[in-house]
Structure formats: structure tokens, C-alpha cells
Length: 413
Image (cartoon, rainbow, N blue to C red; front, side):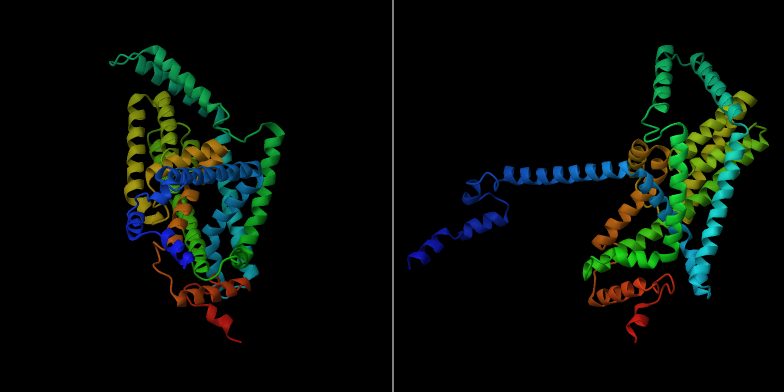
């Protein structure tokens, strides 16, 4: 009887339970420093700090092995872009190894041709391009200093010095080393990327199934959605960006050629490369083209080049990009800008190029895991995910028969 009385006395009263449900501190909670509102806030802050520390440690570790991480990411992006061709060839009856080899060699040929063409186009006139850009900047400097709007010359000089220091600092060239070491790292990374890309194309289904071994039930369905949608976003982003880059370089290069601006070919090549860096890449390339036009053809031609660059960027942003990119880049411009800045600080130009697709994939993964894109998970979804994973494990997954419930073929004896 005494024990019953004590439990009754210690049990929370109805008023206390109502206060707890309303978020009001009860007398029992006020007696503990970790159960009041300040204690709960402190616990949450400690959790957030722990997550941030873990994220910093992970990023620091990845930077230390960037020679492996960067080729891996590039190979994954390229595999996502060329993967539909491999799957189409397999559905047409091509053997898996032949479809992989053909797509792999075709991709290497296209990339090799583009890189070789860009290198030769820029290298043959690189010194002239640098001199023209420098002269254009100096002429623009004189126009600003002698223009109708009074500008303090010291401020212009300070801005020029700050820009030069930033461009030559370790912030922009983070992780880069000079001389033979840089060349060796580049060749090693390129070779590693080629090998990883081949295995992604050949055994993508098996690798995907291996990565899903730790997921069961609803988590398996969510993980498969994350992987499927992530690859769709990556592939769509690369293909769409390549189309946008070709359009930008063609029209801007054509305008430069018609206006008689020298170095039109290397400038068009730089525009193509810059288009892979959203928001700032094409704009920076357009500014370079305008500076060259300013030196060679005068202010009027430079102004026309600026108008053409702005018009092409507007057409790209309002018409072309929504059509060819679809949902691949459904990320706010502020997120893209932050991702670009962080990627540039961590890995230089390569980080700037890779940061935006990674941000888009991260956002797609969050929506897929929370069910925002696909809705609630049913028992049939769980069963189908298990069958699809078994099919992937033996190389008979969605890459062989996309759009069908291929797991049923595995379930049959």
C-alpha cells in the first residue's frame, strides 16, 4: 500500500501533463538544469555544433584525398550523362560489354576532341589574348578615370590591387601546386577517372546494389529513390549544360566574327568553358570578349559585344535553360552562388564546376528521402524495391529494362 501511495504521489498530475503538452516547464523539469527551456536549447545547440564539427572533419578528410575524390565525382557525373546511351544499346540487343565499350570510347573521343580543340585554339593565341585583355582593362581604366562621373583614382587603384591579389592568391588556386607535381597529379587523376568511368558504365547496377546493402524496408525504397533521382539530375545537368555552352559559344563567337573582333575562336572556346560555371562563368567570358573588342575595334564595338552577351544570357536563362535542364537545376540562385563560392575556396576551378551539380543532387536527395517527390511508401513499393535490388545485384536491373517492373523476372525460377 505504501509503494502504491509513493508511485501515485510521484506520478505527474493532470495539470502537469497539460503543461508539458503546452511546452510549459513543470516543477519537475524546473528542478533539472537540462530539462528547462534553456537546457533544451543548450542540448539542441550542442547537437548542431557536433554536426558542424563532423561536417568539417569529413570535408577536411575529402580534401586530403582530393586526387581520388575529384576523379570519382567527375566519373560519376560523366557516367550519369552517358548512361542512357549504354542502356539504349543494351535494350537494342547489344551485349553489355560491347555497349559499354562503344559508349566509353565515344565519350572519350568527344571529350578528347573538345579538350584538344580548346587547347589548340587558346594556346596558339594565348599571349595575344592576355595582352589584349590587359590593354582593354587599361583603356577601360582611362575611360572611367576621365569620364563624366568623378571617381577617386586611389579607389580604382585599390580595387585593381585587391582583384589582382585575389586572382593570384591561394584562395582561387586552392589545392594547386606548380611544375611537374601538378602535371603528375593531373595525369594520375585523369587515368583514375577513365578507369572509374569504365567500371561505372559496365557495372553500375551492381555497384548501386552493393551500396544499398545496408538499407531495408522503407529505407531501401528511399535510398533507391535518392540514387535514381540523383543520377537523373546529374545526367540532365551535364547534357543540358553542354547544350547551353554550345549555344552560348556559337552565338557569341559568331557575333565576334561578324564584328571583326580578333581572337574570336579562342574567345568562343573560353565562353564554352565558362558556361559550365553558372551565373558567373559566361559573364566573365563576355567581359573578356568586350575588353578585347574595346582594344581592337573601339568602344562602339565593345558596347555591341556587351549587348550580345547580355541578350544571349537572357535567352539562355529564360528560354533555353528551362527547356534543356528541366528540374536538373531547380535550385535557388542564392544556393548556387553559395555553392560556387564554397567550391572555389575548397578546390579552385574544379570545385566551382562540380559544386553546382552536387548542390542540385543534394537538394534532390533531400526531397526524395522525405518523400516530397514520390509520396508515401506502400508495402508494394517495399517489395518492388527488394526485387529491383536483387535484379541490380546480378546485372539485370533498370539499365537493361527501364520503365518496367524488372524484379519480377528475378523472382521467377
